[in-house]
Structures are given as structure tokens and as C-alpha cells.
Amino acid sequence: MVKITEIVDFFKTSWYTKTGLGAAIVFVTIAGIGWHESLKQTTIGLFFIYLIIGLVWGWMRRPPRTSKHKIGFLVSISCADDTTSQQLQEDFIRPLRQLMKSGKTGYAFQFINLPQFLAREVEDVEQAEAMRIRTRANFMLYGNVRKRLIGGKSTHVIHLEGIVLYRSISELVNRDLATEFTELLPRRIHISGENDILAFQFTSEWTEIVVRYVLGIAFGLSGELDYSESLLNDSLQQLANKNQDFPIYRKLKERIPLRLSEICQARINWLYMEWMKTRVLDIWDDIEIRLKEVHPAHQNSPDMIYCEAMLHIVKYRDSRLPLTKMKKIGKDGDAVWHLNMAFLYAYNGNLRNAARHYNQAALIEIHPETIAQVESFMVWIIEQDPKQKHLFYCLGFFNWKIKGDEVQARKDFESFLELPLSEVFSKEKQLVQTWMSEM
Figure 1 (tube, rainbow, N blue to C red):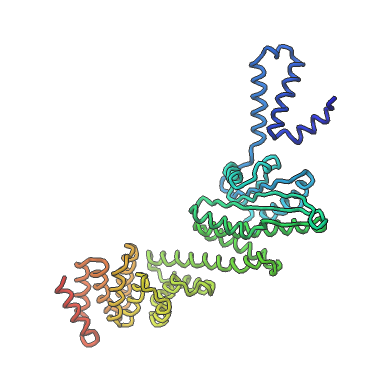
Figure 2: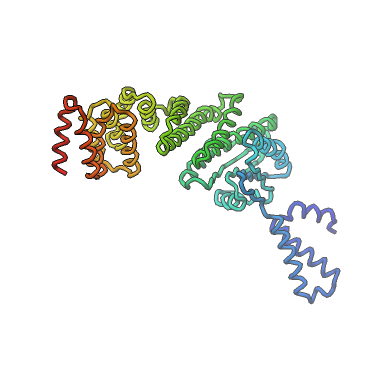
């Protein structure tokens, strides 16, 4: 004879499974028939009971969903038995949840821990992605914990994988983030029974730092620089007291400053675009400060050298240092490099070399926005600095050969010919007269 307690225990453990659903239907049907004889003939009554059971079963099996304006972090880790599951909750899940909620950015996270009956259904990446979509999570940590005898000792074997999806960035970038997330995650760990509490907590800390790091990158790529910077600084601060001999912590300690430098570069680019629109000179004070914050590994990148060149021209009226640096990064196939070289040579009065670089740039496809910016900048320099009136030569050549605007080119050349510089630029004046006759 089956005891009531056995039935209760069965439904406690199996209610959420299909077996539990089937057992509930059978149990209610038998109990109902015994209680109310008319149900034998009442098909509608049976159907109504089955429908209620099915709806309740389906409703109780629904995974939680990420709220709007929250970053969903989903954990789906299945365990072989209830004892392991309880230990995982106490020593890994709970510390991880607390860590995720700590720091300046903790308020933005929604931590979702799947119950075991759902976690056991997630066995591969396709099932994991389907569950991530159902919960609307941005991050998912999934895997399993099993007990094994290794070296004669009872050992927890943890296998973890990660998924990342941030809506504001492209699918390709999401794949790159997922690769880095998985690379830095604690993917396969053996924890012996002797130090399992400390090891589980260490794994929680490790996972949490990696999540903040990867999410910081995602926010940076989507343009949310302030929040990205906060997340990365949180990660860096947490690493301060960690053992740097641990390979993953060492990698993170090396990578985070580079990521913060990338944010700094993004801010510089934004400030530069603001200056292009407003011509407010004070912006260059902010750019100069930011340039000093760029990581040494990025200081010689073309974009930073171009920006530094602009700083020296606009703020200090000096082209010598920028020209020296620009020569070192020589990029013959890059139109922007040729345009910058042409301007710097022209600023120094070397119009011959300037024309040579403009000719090289004319052979390469140039974005229309770049053409507009170059022309606008030269006009602004001529207006701001009376000593640079000879730039009308370059402006005319640029409009003629690159922009294809012969009307404006003729006007610029005429302005150059009117300058009282016959001795200094006599050859250039002769060339201009020849060019104008060819138009």
C-alpha cells in the first residue's frame, strides 16, 4: 500500500517533470472517479480538470524573465543530486549573486538562477540559447556539477560555458565577446571535498569579475562609455587584492587598462567631432588631458597621432613634432595619412611636398565626409592665422584634384596669386597660372 507521505515526496521531486504531470493527471482522475461517480460519464469534466492541471504545471515551469532596463545574468547549473545542488547554492550561487549586486554598478544587474528541473533541460549550446531567449538575459552561465572519485577522493567536477548577447552591438562583435567570456571563465574545475567551500567561493569571485569585464566591453562598444568605464574600474578594483600568479587574473590585469584606454580614445574621438562642429578651442584642453591618459600601447596608433597633430596645430601652432611622428607611421595606401602629411608640409611652407601628397591621396578613394572636413579645417586655419594665407595654394589644389570643384579651385588659386609672396613662392605661382589655363 502506497503511503501518503510517499506520494507527497514523489510530487515534491517530480511535479515539474513530464512524469510528474502524467502522474498528477492519473492521480486526480482516479481520486475524482472514486469521489464522484458521475465523472465516469463526464468527459467534459475530465477535460476541464486536465486543462487546469496542464495550465498550472506550465505556469509553474516558466523561467523568470529579465525586467526592462536591467542586465539579465542567467545561471543554469544542473547537479546530480539534491545534496550537491544545496551545496552549489550555498557556496557558489549565493556568493555570486552577492558579488554581482556589489560595487557601483550592481544595481543594474538582475540575477536569475534557474531551478534544477529547468537547469537539467539545458545540456548543449542550442538548448542554452533557447533558455537565454526565454529569460531575455544578456549573459548566461550554464553547465553541470558532478561528483567523481579522483585519486581516491570525492571531488566536485564543475563544467561551465558562457553565452553573451548585447542588443546594441553587432552579431559578429557578440561572437567575439562570447569567445572572450568563455576563454576567461572557469570552464572545468575539480574541487576536492577538503576545501570545497573556499574553492566554490573563489570560482564565484572569478566568474563575477569576468562578467563585469565582458559587460564593460559590451557597453563601451554600444557607446555607453560612462557605464562601461564604471564596470571596468569595478573589475580592476576587485583584482587589486587578488593573487596575480593566477593566469586569468593576470590576463585581466593586463587587459582592463587597455580596455579603459580604448574608452579614453572613444572620448577623444567624440571631443574631436564636437570641435569640428563648434570650433570651441577649450575642447582641445580636454583632448590634451585625455591624450595623456591613453595607454602607451595605443599612443602610437594612427588615430591618436592624427589627433595629437591637430592639437599641436590648433593649440600651439606647431607642426614640427606632428610631422616627425607622421613620417614614422607612413601609410602609402591611406588617403587620410597623405592628406595629413600634405597639410603639415604646407603649414611649414613646403608646398611642393604638399602637392605631391595631395596627388597621392587623389589616387585613393576618400570618404565624402573626410573631404568636407579637410576643406573646412583649411579654411578655418586661414581665417585664424594670417601667416598661413599660402594655404590657398593647397586649398585650390585640393578642390581641383580631389573635390573636383574647379570653380572654387579657381577662386582659391586667385587668392593665392594675390598674396605678396612672389619671391618665396614664385615657382608655385607659375604652376598655379599654368593650372588655371588648363581648367
